[in-house]
Figure 1 (cartoon, rainbow, N blue to C red):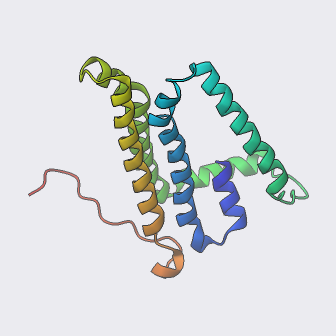
Figure 2 (cartoon, rainbow, N blue to C red):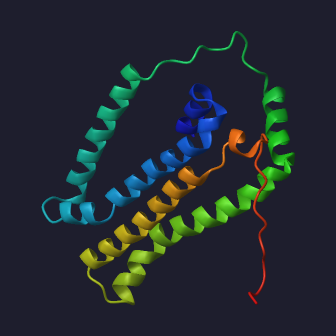
Length: 178
């Protein structure tokens, strides 16, 4: 959420959709790092050693962010809880939210559940793959996911390209194909 908040604060609305796609790609790179590269690293060190290395890398990035990213001026008076809750209700009442949220929740949630919980045990126990083979398949899944996020960011309509503040969603047909 922090990167999306930064995009909303620092970039014009015309660039926010594509930048959000790039943020998703960056997250997908983390999923890629947890596949074949991690399996390779486990050949030389224990998982504890690998996680210590990841912890050091994350600490280094946090220090870089602390010194490099500019602070946002704080508002003179913080909004009350009631005002914040009105904003949440406004979002939940908007029809656009109910068009996007279920699609995003089920799509990303199911992908993350399959990749994070069930894919490797299935590949090892049912498909008979080795740990390296399962990691290679997870890498392919992650690459596909990252490509989809790239496409999402590149193809996201901007308010200026549609002439409207909120682009109209494409029609979705549910049911058997003809």
